[in-house]
Image 1: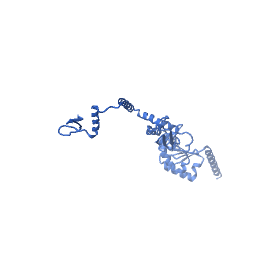
Image 2: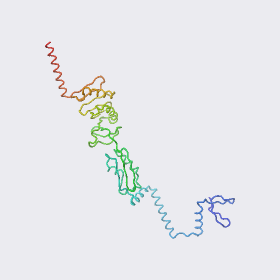
Image 3: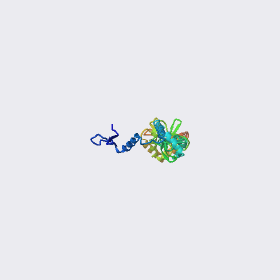
Image 4: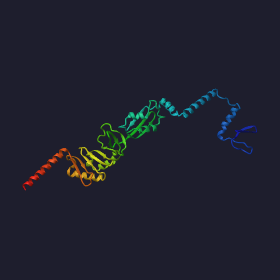
Length: 308
């Protein structure tokens, strides 16, 4: 342990490193002035200020309070309280980019109480809370001093309506559920129905969209047995597609419709599940008319045969 001073020839000199063969130590330069001050205090040459003890006690209590605040994790609350009451409370919140997301829900997730200070406000934590709302794709929360909070939202884009039993939900292009369908704003979106339709629907819809004349007529895409698809057209006709070669089947259907107007006829279904045949289901009126025409045709043949 180094001594602070060494007296030689009746003079006191500060030391901190070895000065010569006598074993003296010279203090570093930055310690010399405090050391000289302490020597003067010890010698009675320095008189303490009148309220030094009170000031020291106040500093001790203040330091203790600060330490307790930090150790107890209350520093942010203290900063919030002090700054809010000195003109830095959040007075305005600007929310932009929200169409489906309620501004009330955004404010609730931000969590303001009227005395929340902008300086101590955790913008990242607020961003994460707002980001958890159903329609929010991404969000930015910015503090603008002295008292404004800016929230900019990018919402998800619905791709289709997914029906599960009697429940209708909006889904994204990757099949992720956004929120339940409410109102008629998105009623024109394609509908996917059945088990597995939410996951497989977007990829299949993309195939059908390649045949625009068919896609424009489709009301719903129905997943059957998680293996294949039926197309329910807006006029009520059901197109039954095979498990494989969907694109080739769609191209064949499109060609038949262009040539003979198949999908505009008085029919209920077109069964294309078998590769070598096509079955058409007729409406009751069309079936009755077809049966009458066949009877008339057969009757004419019999008469012709009788004359012969």
